[in-house]
Image (cartoon, rainbow, N blue to C red; front, side, top):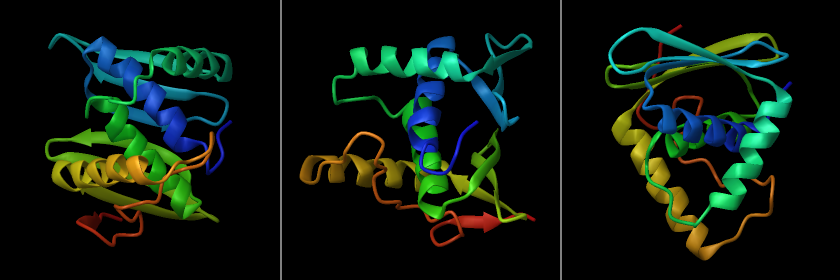
Length: 161
């Protein structure tokens, strides 16, 4: 369903939706025809949600209407930063799992699998850099801001094969 170049936008809208749900301990898996997300809510039980193409289109439209230019650094911005990593590396999403100290991002590139862990601090630095970049250079719709994390392990990422 998704291709490299679309992840930052799609993961941002999923993250926004998860923020609205008060989601914690998220897991996102690209199942090809849909995106499967699960999370803990209210400290009770695990909740699932499937996002199909039409769901994502609707969420994107809602996000455009509500966008003010000053988003909080919640799940939307965090997932956008990780999606930007995928887009910049030209890799396909396999899964994103929230860990106790950040996120584990698994991706594929030509049959090769990579799994990296990103600290919350490294993700926040990336978000800050992307926000600063938005003030000085504009991106066209569908264009992804330059990556700051480095999916292939350049900044505070630990390979976890």
